[in-house]
Image (tube, rainbow, N blue to C red; front, side, top):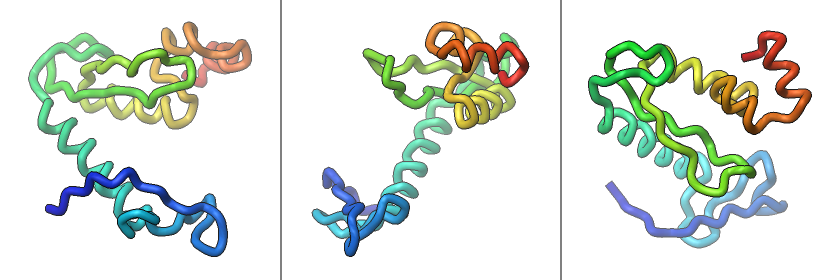
Amino acid sequence: MKVSLCKHRFPVQPPHGSILRPGDCSRCGATWADVQAELDRQQNALRLGTAHRGTCAGCHLTRMVFRYQREQQPWDETEPPVIWLCVRDWSYAREREETTGFIDFNDLFDRGTDEQLEAGLRGAL
């Protein structure tokens, strides 16, 4: 496996690339897709490598739990906390985060706008 310590710079202005299709890294030549695939591989390795039997933070049952950490948001002063979720709750949290930006009602209540909270109360979460 080739290890790269490059701090990638992907051009996003024509003729070298665009916002939707960044060009190859101007420092090492790696493609955007290759770098994203490597980041996904690393996330999966971390998630599977740290899995253990424990109590799920979502359903509170003892099951095999996996590391879940939501994406960093503008309001976060530090890195978001790691929570341990079973496969089912991990999938639900990921789906909610992708559609709403929040992983549960408490996150929405603490960080959401009035409109987002109203949508969550109507059943979006």
